[in-house]
Image (cartoon, rainbow, N blue to C red; front, side):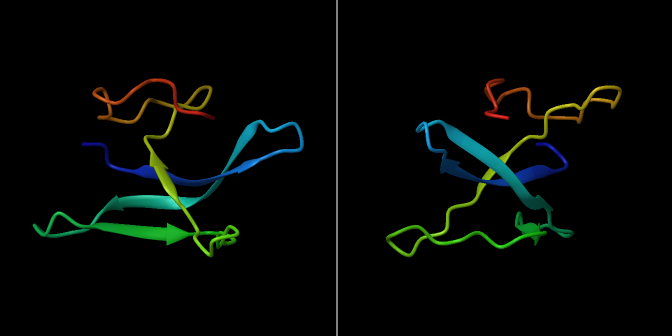
Amino acid sequence: MTDRYDAVISRKDKQGKTRYTKIGAAFPAKGDNGGFNIVLDALPMPNAEGQAWISLFVPKPRDGAPARSGGDDMQDDVPF
């Protein structure tokens, strides 16, 4: 398991292409309960049905930054 996930929201642009915006992070909670803590830097807006979806992805390494541990079992096509 990875030590952190990026919390992102998706939306369609004018051309119908899906765009992703990072709004925070999630990480395992301390203790043995198997839970997660989520910290949000922005709040998502609800869609027409009143739902606000947040997706969690293993962070991709940034140029010059070391890769994060874990996440090898996940697909490598993270959308951002």
